[in-house]
Image (cartoon, rainbow, N blue to C red; front, side, top):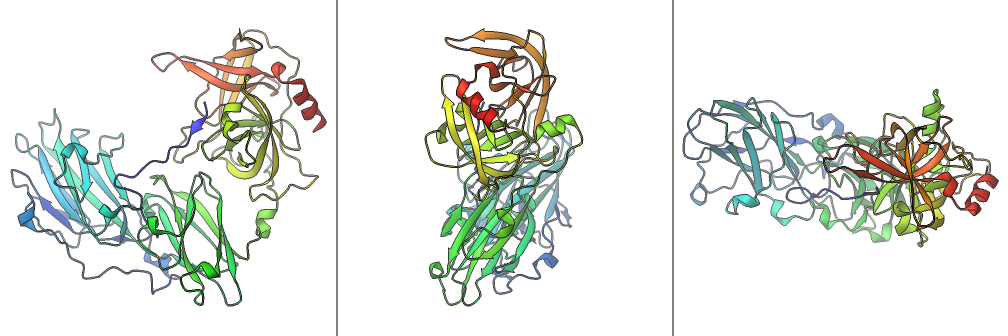
Amino acid sequence: MRERKERRQPAVAPAAQASGTTVIVVLLLAVVVSAIVAACVSGAMWGLLNSDELSSASSEWAVEADPEWEPEIDPAETDFDPRTLSGSTAVEGTFLEGEVTTHDYALTFPNDAVFLRLDLHTNAGDVIWLSAAINRQNADFADWDQQLDDDGREKFVWFARKGSPDFSGGTMFVRLALQDGGDAKADYVLELNAVRRDVLAVLGPGDSHEGVVGHPQGGRATFEVRMPDGVDRVRVDLMDALRDLDLFVSTDGPSVDLGDAERAAEEPFATEFLIVARDELEDPDGGRFFLNVLDPHWNEWTSPYRILVSEGSAVPEELRTPLEFPAMDGALERAGQAIVLVRDIDGYGSAVVVSPKGLLLSAFHVVENESDANRDIRVAVVLDPARPPTEAFVARVLSYDADKDIALLRITGTVAGVPLPDDYRLPHLDVAWDDRLPLGAPLRSVGFPGTGGRNTRGTQTWGVGVVAGYERCEAFELMKTDASISNGYSGGALLDERLRVVANIQAALEDEGGGAHTGYALPSTELPDEWRRLIEADR
C-alpha cells in the first residue's frame, strides 16, 4: 500500500533548461495516397507565457535561436510532399468517406525548442489515432510514440528535452490513422506548440520569484542568478509547490539540454535547495549562473512554485520559523490535520500524529528504507483540504516492529531541518488503547491515495465503513474493514466515532474485478507497551 515513485519518461526524453514562450512552428503537410485540401488556421494555443513576463530577463540570453530559421527537409528523401504553412500554428484536415485511411505530416521545430506538444481536435470521437516520432521517420511504425489522453475528441502527444540527442534541431513525423468504424467523413484540427529556451528573470540575494510550471511552460522555468561583488556563495530554495519539482544549475549559459547541467537537486520532494559557490562558476568574476526549475513528470496541469535566493549557505529566516496551522471549523477538518503524508526517496504513504510533540504512527513498509538509516523522512500536512499536503517537517524512525508492520516516528524539525521550539505543539489525535471495537462498529478511514487530481500527490481522502471482522495471525490480530483504502493509505488511520485512532492501515485486498475490497489494519490494542508509555509521556 506504499505508493512507489515512478517518474514518467517523456516520449523522446526529458528536456534541458529554461521555460519559455510560444513559437510559430513551420508545418510541412503531406497526405499519403490521396491529396487532401488543408486550410491554415491562425491563433495561439493554451496561453503560453506572455512576452510581458520576460521584461526582467537578461536580453543577452532571452532568445538565441536564428530568427531566419528554415525547415531542412529534403522532399527527395521522404515520402512526403512538403508544403510550408508559414504564419500559422494549426492546420485543418478531413478524412473523406471511402478515401485514404492515413494522413502524414512532417513538422519541423527550431534547435532551441525544449518542449513540443501536438494537439488533435476532432469531431470523430476516437476513430482517429494519433502517432508521432522525432527524427525517426524510417523507424518501424510500431516503435513510434503514441501518447493519447482518454478523451476521444482531444488527443495530444508531447516531447520534452533532457539528455536526448535525437531532439535537437529536427523534425516531428506525425501520422493520423482512421481506425475501424471510421467510414464517415471526419474533420480534425492539428495544432503544434513549441516552448523555446528563455530566461524569465534575473535574480540576486534577497530576491523571490513566484510562477507556475506545466505543459504551457514546457515543464520548466529558467532564471539567471547573479552574485554581487563580495558574495562568495548563494543558497536557492524551492518551495510552495504542489508536487515534486527539481532544481538544475548550469554555469556556462542557459543550455537547452538539462542533461548538461552541472548541479541538480532532484529528489522526489516539493521542496529542494542548492548552494552554489562562486569558485564553481565558469566565470567566477562574472558571478552568475543559470537556475532551472523542472517538473520531472511533465505533468499537463500547472503547479505553482516559489524561488528564494539568499546570501550564504544558512537556512533563510523565513524557513526557520515553524509552520502555523490554520484554524479549522469542523471536527473532521481538525482531525485531518493530524493525518499526514510521509515521503522518502522511494515512495510515500500516510501517518498519524499521536502526540503534540510530534510522535507519529505509520506502517513499517512505508518507512522501511529509512528504518535503519540516519536519514530524514519528509512530512507533509494539510493546510487546505482541497489541496495536496504541504511539506513542512522532517522525521526520523524511532522504533519499529516488522512482523506487525508498524513504525513509530518523531518529527525532528522543520522541512529545512531547523529544530522545533520546545513549546511548539502539533495537531494530534488520541489513541484508543484498550477498546476492542465490536463487529459492525462504524469507522472512518483517512489517508492519501496514490492517484490525486491534477498533481503527483493526492489530497487527503476520507472513507466510511464498519469493523468487518478480525483475523488472527501468529502472535497478533488484524482488524478488517470495508472502509475505502487504496495505494498510499498505508500508515493512515481508522478512526472511531470519537475520532480516536483505533487502528493503523496496512493493506487492502480487492476481488478479481477490482470492485469490493477488504482493508486490513493493526488495532491500537496491538501496539507495543513501550510505545504506549512514550506516547502518553509525550502529551
